[in-house]
Picture 1 (cartoon, helix red, strand yellow):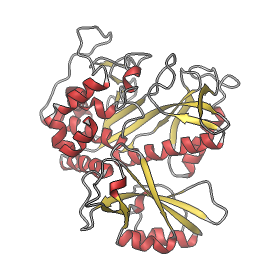
Picture 2 (cartoon, rainbow, N blue to C red):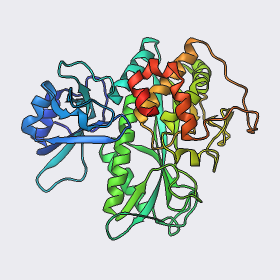
Picture 3 (cartoon, rainbow, N blue to C red):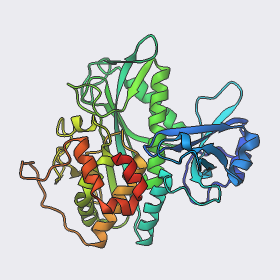
Picture 4 (cartoon, one colour):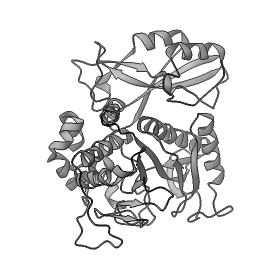
Length: 401
């Protein structure tokens, strides 16, 4: 079998294909990964002898031990690997290859677990599909590289003192970024652009557009690869929103397009602007998230503009107008829930034929603001019946606390 790592091609991979691949490529270890309600990646590992059982019967785990899942009384859930997410890990063990697959989470009777964040995103994608719409995503991730201490802990000392798009020798992260990009490419994920960002030791890597689920899975893989490679280099990769008070924060700018329907982009954007206050908690879920907003081109007003990077949403100067960039989210969010909410909000804008607020090149105090702190964001979320209708009461209550 030819080794191919291009994922998510319809009907390309079956579980029989994965088993055959494991036999031919001397795969000795399989990581089955999934995510808790906050987007933290978890995994259990199995040997190839258990792979067929994993696909057919699922692998059980204690859901009461996972934040936001089940209690001790009904604690069994099952992982079913998605064969289309198979990727061989480029750092090969001495005893054979290792592959990883993301999993669907189900109850013992085989029904989907409603707090499986990949399932939540799939439902949003399916609703769009029912409307004849496909929404593509391409995100931009910022992170700092800090030096480790003798115990491997974060010193918060930046790797370098370089600035925006500086080159070596000022930019000491170039080799690390190259290793990250080449590793991702080996795994079938091709970054579009990488460069040094504005902050000391701050970096950015951007991705091409892809379907919502693929983009979210790729983002999860990306963060894990970045942290793993940084650790191998004696560094800490920090994605938190504001790791250094006097330096720019880390954003996760989300680019979106409505495939083959350029005429729907403006009502799609209007839907997002209409619901942004309610969903901010899911895009900026930590206390430090709000230390970033309103500083160093991170937005604080509910506004949009052509090209202006200080606005909440901008329409970049590209050859196509079928693209918007949302600039408020940060990397602490659960990207599966973020993409799901953006799809639902955009679809509502299309269904109701919403119109955007006027374009604003210069933000003024008469504009409506995003929530200014975590407490206000939680209040806006707690008041939202729309969020309960699209995510479910349990998910909203977990985030509100």
